[in-house]
Length: 281
Image (tube, rainbow, N blue to C red; front, side, top):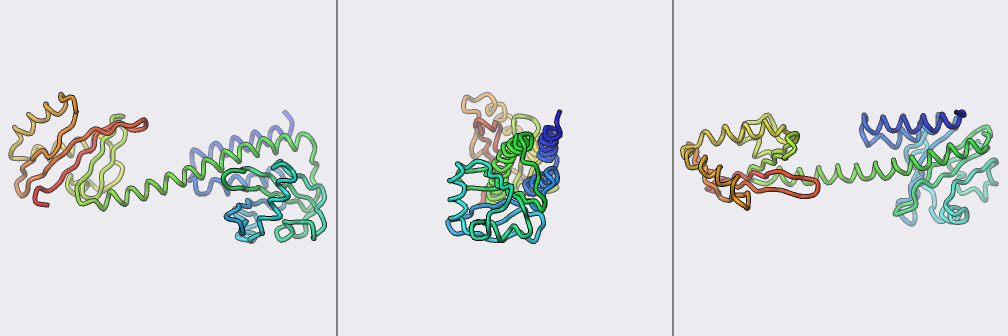
Protein backbone atom coordinates (compact mmCIF):
# COMPACT_ATOMS: atom_id res chain seq x y z
CA UNK A 1 0.00 0.00 0.00
CA UNK A 2 1.40 3.39 -1.02
CA UNK A 3 1.78 6.38 1.31
CA UNK A 4 -1.14 8.17 -0.36
CA UNK A 5 -3.39 5.10 -0.08
CA UNK A 6 -2.60 4.91 3.63
CA UNK A 7 -3.44 8.61 4.04
CA UNK A 8 -6.81 8.17 2.29
CA UNK A 9 -7.60 5.12 4.44
CA UNK A 10 -6.53 7.04 7.55
CA UNK A 11 -8.92 9.86 6.67
CA UNK A 12 -11.85 7.47 6.14
CA UNK A 13 -11.14 5.56 9.35
CA UNK A 14 -10.75 8.64 11.55
CA UNK A 15 -13.83 10.40 10.21
CA UNK A 16 -15.86 7.21 10.59
CA UNK A 17 -14.90 6.93 14.26
CA UNK A 18 -15.65 10.62 14.84
CA UNK A 19 -19.04 10.19 13.17
CA UNK A 20 -19.96 7.58 15.78
CA UNK A 21 -18.28 8.96 18.89
CA UNK A 22 -18.29 12.79 18.75
CA UNK A 23 -20.78 15.62 18.36
CA UNK A 24 -21.89 16.40 14.81
CA UNK A 25 -21.38 20.16 15.21
CA UNK A 26 -17.58 19.76 15.18
CA UNK A 27 -17.45 16.96 12.61
CA UNK A 28 -16.68 19.09 9.55
CA UNK A 29 -14.06 21.24 11.30
CA UNK A 30 -12.30 18.10 12.50
CA UNK A 31 -12.38 16.61 8.98
CA UNK A 32 -10.86 19.71 7.38
CA UNK A 33 -8.13 19.89 10.03
CA UNK A 34 -7.39 16.22 9.40
CA UNK A 35 -7.03 16.81 5.64
CA UNK A 36 -4.62 19.65 6.34
CA UNK A 37 -2.42 17.48 8.54
CA UNK A 38 -2.46 14.48 6.20
CA UNK A 39 -1.60 16.61 3.16
CA UNK A 40 0.99 18.70 4.97
CA UNK A 41 -0.81 21.90 3.95
CA UNK A 42 -0.15 25.37 5.36
CA UNK A 43 -3.82 26.37 5.34
CA UNK A 44 -7.10 24.48 5.02
CA UNK A 45 -10.61 25.89 4.99
CA UNK A 46 -14.15 25.52 3.76
CA UNK A 47 -15.62 28.21 1.53
CA UNK A 48 -19.41 28.16 1.58
CA UNK A 49 -21.60 30.12 -0.83
CA UNK A 50 -24.30 31.58 1.41
CA UNK A 51 -26.04 33.68 -1.23
CA UNK A 52 -25.39 35.54 -4.49
CA UNK A 53 -23.10 38.08 -2.83
CA UNK A 54 -21.42 36.12 -0.04
CA UNK A 55 -18.90 33.30 -0.02
CA UNK A 56 -17.75 32.88 3.59
CA UNK A 57 -14.70 31.12 5.00
CA UNK A 58 -15.52 28.52 7.67
CA UNK A 59 -13.69 25.80 9.61
CA UNK A 60 -10.37 27.47 8.79
CA UNK A 61 -6.94 26.49 9.99
CA UNK A 62 -5.38 28.85 10.95
CA UNK A 63 -8.40 30.31 12.74
CA UNK A 64 -7.84 33.96 11.80
CA UNK A 65 -9.06 33.19 8.26
CA UNK A 66 -12.56 32.39 9.52
CA UNK A 67 -15.43 34.66 8.37
CA UNK A 68 -13.47 36.30 5.55
CA UNK A 69 -16.02 37.06 2.83
CA UNK A 70 -15.25 36.70 -0.88
CA UNK A 71 -17.30 37.54 -3.95
CA UNK A 72 -18.95 34.37 -5.31
CA UNK A 73 -19.21 35.45 -8.97
CA UNK A 74 -15.54 35.16 -10.04
CA UNK A 75 -15.16 31.93 -8.06
CA UNK A 76 -18.23 30.45 -9.77
CA UNK A 77 -16.76 31.34 -13.16
CA UNK A 78 -13.53 29.57 -12.23
CA UNK A 79 -15.42 26.45 -11.13
CA UNK A 80 -17.52 26.35 -14.30
CA UNK A 81 -14.42 26.76 -16.43
CA UNK A 82 -12.97 23.62 -14.81
CA UNK A 83 -16.23 21.64 -14.91
CA UNK A 84 -16.48 21.62 -11.10
CA UNK A 85 -13.46 19.31 -10.93
CA UNK A 86 -10.62 19.67 -8.45
CA UNK A 87 -8.25 22.48 -9.46
CA UNK A 88 -4.52 22.06 -8.85
CA UNK A 89 -2.39 25.20 -8.86
CA UNK A 90 1.27 24.17 -8.86
CA UNK A 91 1.97 27.88 -8.87
CA UNK A 92 -0.48 30.59 -7.91
CA UNK A 93 -1.78 32.86 -10.68
CA UNK A 94 -0.84 36.55 -10.55
CA UNK A 95 -2.82 38.57 -7.96
CA UNK A 96 -5.09 40.16 -10.57
CA UNK A 97 -6.20 36.66 -11.67
CA UNK A 98 -6.25 34.96 -8.26
CA UNK A 99 -9.83 35.03 -6.97
CA UNK A 100 -8.60 33.68 -3.62
CA UNK A 101 -5.76 36.14 -3.02
CA UNK A 102 -7.31 37.41 0.23
CA UNK A 103 -6.94 33.98 1.86
CA UNK A 104 -3.66 32.90 0.28
CA UNK A 105 -0.94 35.20 1.62
CA UNK A 106 2.64 33.93 1.16
CA UNK A 107 1.54 30.68 -0.51
CA UNK A 108 3.10 29.16 -3.60
CA UNK A 109 0.57 26.44 -4.53
CA UNK A 110 -3.05 25.55 -3.83
CA UNK A 111 -5.84 23.05 -4.36
CA UNK A 112 -9.48 24.00 -4.84
CA UNK A 113 -11.83 21.08 -4.31
CA UNK A 114 -15.60 21.33 -4.96
CA UNK A 115 -17.22 18.96 -2.46
CA UNK A 116 -20.84 19.88 -3.07
CA UNK A 117 -22.56 21.47 -6.05
CA UNK A 118 -26.26 21.29 -5.14
CA UNK A 119 -28.10 23.02 -3.61
CA UNK A 120 -25.22 25.05 -2.12
CA UNK A 121 -21.71 25.15 -3.47
CA UNK A 122 -19.02 24.39 -0.94
CA UNK A 123 -15.28 24.23 -1.51
CA UNK A 124 -12.33 22.84 0.38
CA UNK A 125 -9.23 24.93 -0.20
CA UNK A 126 -5.72 23.78 0.71
CA UNK A 127 -2.63 25.95 0.36
CA UNK A 128 1.09 25.27 0.70
CA UNK A 129 4.03 27.55 1.37
CA UNK A 130 6.19 24.95 -0.40
CA UNK A 131 5.07 23.20 -3.60
CA UNK A 132 3.81 19.63 -3.03
CA UNK A 133 4.05 16.89 -5.64
CA UNK A 134 0.69 16.71 -7.40
CA UNK A 135 1.43 13.21 -8.72
CA UNK A 136 -1.10 10.49 -9.61
CA UNK A 137 -1.08 9.01 -6.09
CA UNK A 138 -1.73 12.42 -4.53
CA UNK A 139 -4.63 13.10 -6.90
CA UNK A 140 -6.19 9.69 -6.26
CA UNK A 141 -5.94 10.30 -2.52
CA UNK A 142 -7.57 13.72 -2.91
CA UNK A 143 -10.42 12.26 -4.95
CA UNK A 144 -11.13 9.68 -2.23
CA UNK A 145 -11.10 12.42 0.39
CA UNK A 146 -13.38 14.59 -1.78
CA UNK A 147 -16.03 11.86 -1.95
CA UNK A 148 -15.83 11.27 1.79
CA UNK A 149 -16.03 15.02 2.49
CA UNK A 150 -19.16 15.26 0.36
CA UNK A 151 -20.71 12.50 2.49
CA UNK A 152 -19.66 14.39 5.63
CA UNK A 153 -21.24 17.65 4.42
CA UNK A 154 -24.53 15.94 3.55
CA UNK A 155 -24.54 13.99 6.81
CA UNK A 156 -23.69 16.97 9.02
CA UNK A 157 -26.34 19.16 7.38
CA UNK A 158 -28.97 16.44 7.76
CA UNK A 159 -28.08 15.84 11.40
CA UNK A 160 -28.12 19.53 12.25
CA UNK A 161 -31.50 19.90 10.49
CA UNK A 162 -33.00 16.93 12.35
CA UNK A 163 -31.63 18.22 15.66
CA UNK A 164 -33.27 21.60 15.02
CA UNK A 165 -36.57 19.92 14.13
CA UNK A 166 -36.39 17.74 17.25
CA UNK A 167 -35.68 20.76 19.48
CA UNK A 168 -38.52 22.73 17.91
CA UNK A 169 -41.11 19.97 18.26
CA UNK A 170 -39.97 19.10 21.78
CA UNK A 171 -40.50 22.73 22.77
CA UNK A 172 -44.00 22.63 21.26
CA UNK A 173 -44.92 19.36 22.97
CA UNK A 174 -43.59 20.55 26.34
CA UNK A 175 -45.82 23.64 26.05
CA UNK A 176 -49.00 21.60 25.55
CA UNK A 177 -51.08 21.72 28.79
CA UNK A 178 -51.94 17.99 28.61
CA UNK A 179 -49.64 15.22 29.86
CA UNK A 180 -48.19 13.34 26.87
CA UNK A 181 -46.40 9.99 27.02
CA UNK A 182 -45.13 8.06 24.01
CA UNK A 183 -44.00 4.44 24.36
CA UNK A 184 -42.24 2.88 21.40
CA UNK A 185 -42.98 -0.75 20.58
CA UNK A 186 -39.23 -1.43 20.26
CA UNK A 187 -39.01 -1.72 24.05
CA UNK A 188 -36.04 0.65 24.07
CA UNK A 189 -37.33 4.19 23.67
CA UNK A 190 -40.03 6.40 25.10
CA UNK A 191 -40.69 10.09 25.65
CA UNK A 192 -42.68 12.26 28.05
CA UNK A 193 -43.41 15.98 28.09
CA UNK A 194 -43.13 18.32 31.08
CA UNK A 195 -46.75 17.83 32.19
CA UNK A 196 -46.46 14.07 31.80
CA UNK A 197 -43.31 13.89 33.91
CA UNK A 198 -45.01 15.90 36.68
CA UNK A 199 -48.16 13.75 36.58
CA UNK A 200 -46.27 10.46 36.69
CA UNK A 201 -43.73 11.61 39.29
CA UNK A 202 -40.74 11.14 37.00
CA UNK A 203 -37.39 12.85 37.44
CA UNK A 204 -37.88 15.00 34.34
CA UNK A 205 -39.23 15.25 30.79
CA UNK A 206 -37.63 13.87 27.64
CA UNK A 207 -36.36 10.39 26.77
CA UNK A 208 -37.32 7.62 29.20
CA UNK A 209 -37.19 3.83 29.06
CA UNK A 210 -40.57 2.29 28.10
CA UNK A 211 -40.46 0.08 31.21
CA UNK A 212 -40.18 3.18 33.41
CA UNK A 213 -43.07 4.90 31.63
CA UNK A 214 -45.30 1.80 31.66
CA UNK A 215 -44.67 1.26 35.37
CA UNK A 216 -45.45 4.91 36.16
CA UNK A 217 -48.73 4.75 34.18
CA UNK A 218 -49.69 1.52 35.98
CA UNK A 219 -49.01 3.12 39.38
CA UNK A 220 -51.17 6.11 38.42
CA UNK A 221 -53.95 3.78 37.24
CA UNK A 222 -53.84 1.82 40.50
CA UNK A 223 -54.54 5.04 42.42
CA UNK A 224 -57.88 5.50 40.65
CA UNK A 225 -61.07 4.85 42.65
CA UNK A 226 -62.70 3.27 39.57
CA UNK A 227 -59.84 0.79 39.04
CA UNK A 228 -62.20 -2.13 38.34
CA UNK A 229 -63.84 -0.30 35.45
CA UNK A 230 -60.44 0.86 34.18
CA UNK A 231 -59.07 -2.71 34.14
CA UNK A 232 -62.14 -3.88 32.24
CA UNK A 233 -61.55 -1.23 29.60
CA UNK A 234 -57.86 -2.11 29.41
CA UNK A 235 -58.88 -5.52 28.08
CA UNK A 236 -61.23 -3.86 25.60
CA UNK A 237 -58.47 -1.49 24.49
CA UNK A 238 -56.02 -4.20 23.51
CA UNK A 239 -58.66 -6.40 21.91
CA UNK A 240 -60.47 -3.72 19.89
CA UNK A 241 -59.87 -3.48 16.12
CA UNK A 242 -59.07 0.25 16.44
CA UNK A 243 -56.61 -0.50 19.27
CA UNK A 244 -57.41 2.90 20.74
CA UNK A 245 -59.57 4.61 23.33
CA UNK A 246 -60.53 8.26 23.89
CA UNK A 247 -61.83 10.26 26.87
CA UNK A 248 -61.43 7.32 29.24
CA UNK A 249 -62.26 8.46 32.78
CA UNK A 250 -59.71 7.81 35.55
CA UNK A 251 -61.16 9.04 38.84
CA UNK A 252 -58.39 9.99 41.26
CA UNK A 253 -58.72 11.26 44.82
CA UNK A 254 -58.45 14.96 43.95
CA UNK A 255 -59.30 15.10 40.24
CA UNK A 256 -60.56 13.14 37.28
CA UNK A 257 -58.40 12.49 34.24
CA UNK A 258 -59.69 12.01 30.72
CA UNK A 259 -57.26 9.52 29.19
CA UNK A 260 -56.73 8.69 25.52
CA UNK A 261 -54.45 5.94 24.22
CA UNK A 262 -53.79 6.09 20.50
CA UNK A 263 -51.64 3.95 18.21
CA UNK A 264 -48.84 5.78 16.36
CA UNK A 265 -47.58 3.95 13.28
CA UNK A 266 -45.30 5.26 10.54
CA UNK A 267 -42.44 3.77 8.53
CA UNK A 268 -40.02 4.89 11.25
CA UNK A 269 -42.12 4.69 14.44
CA UNK A 270 -44.54 2.24 15.98
CA UNK A 271 -45.93 2.74 19.46
CA UNK A 272 -48.62 4.29 21.63
CA UNK A 273 -49.36 7.86 22.60
CA UNK A 274 -51.00 8.39 25.98
CA UNK A 275 -52.79 11.73 26.57
CA UNK A 276 -53.90 12.71 30.07
CA UNK A 277 -56.24 15.71 30.39
CA UNK A 278 -57.77 17.12 33.54
CA UNK A 279 -61.55 16.78 33.18
CA UNK A 280 -62.02 20.30 34.53
CA UNK A 281 -59.91 21.96 31.81
